[in-house]
Length: 371
Ligand SMILES: [Ca+2]
Ligand SMILES: [Ca+2]
Ligand SMILES: [Ca+2]
Image (cartoon, rainbow, N blue to C red; front, top):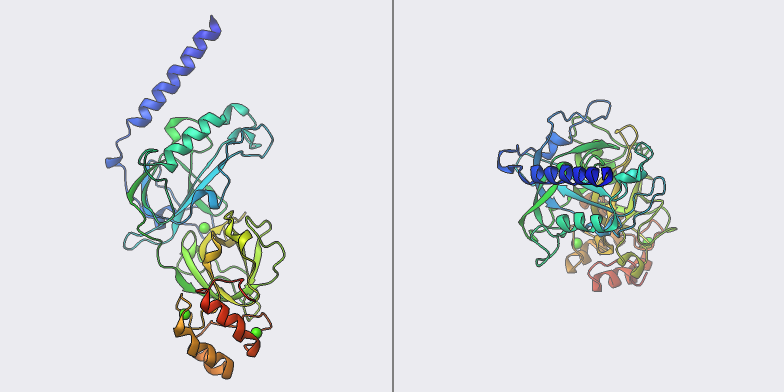
């Protein structure tokens, strides 16, 4: 009898929390900028003190399953979070910049500082949580995708490894749920900032950290960049869901880490042999908050080979710049700073690069073809 009473009580507590969560009037909740939410101190810690709930708007940068595996996986193993789900949302409002990640895990109870399986979602509960997020307009409508414009409605968040995330603060209570409202379908990804590795790291490959977030890793955190003039330091480990990360390197020897997502395209297409432009967004995982930036690349199509004029497309406009690179390297570098169209990886543009250039041209810049 006591058991049934306490079960009834627990059910009533959950029900009242659910009703309270649903009762939230979001129209009166402040709409804040990502720049405000991601502000940091000079030491790299979160400087956000605005509290919750808040609303943030922006464009979704990744399909969640291209980054983390959401497959339900209830377990009680220490550190094993079971299914995980995360999107990055880039600012689009005038005057705002950067972006914010929204994360959920299935088995919070397996975190050592919790250590209690009562804090894990069952597989059924986890699927229900994800359904809410993946289908903001109902399951009869298309799922949330990269390029959708959304409002993120956060009841909670935590600083994690250099970012201020939206999350549930490791709680199963509906009072900590975050919600997604799809304001625009498939509006498209924001144009990437055109950069080189010198915008992210110094000559010794030490990350550039600016606590005002105007330059370096903070500037580009959770937002799209197109990094030109890079190759792989090594192709070892190439494939979906790279662990450890690969290293990008430029002609000066600067290095920067790159993570390839879970998308099968990384198994279908091989690594580029030479230099390329790569488009993705920056993540940060850092103990100090002042380093640990890396590039997130979600699809093989985000690597571009043969873009001799670095305009983001590989087409006939690249032929003359390629011929210039072949005939006069100094003039080419002056005309197209940061670009390098060595496609064979021997650090020179020679006749050997002609065939791979033609292959890239006929393949719209797809890397890993005919090299
Ligand atoms: Ca940061
Ligand atoms: Ca081009
Ligand atoms: Ca070459």
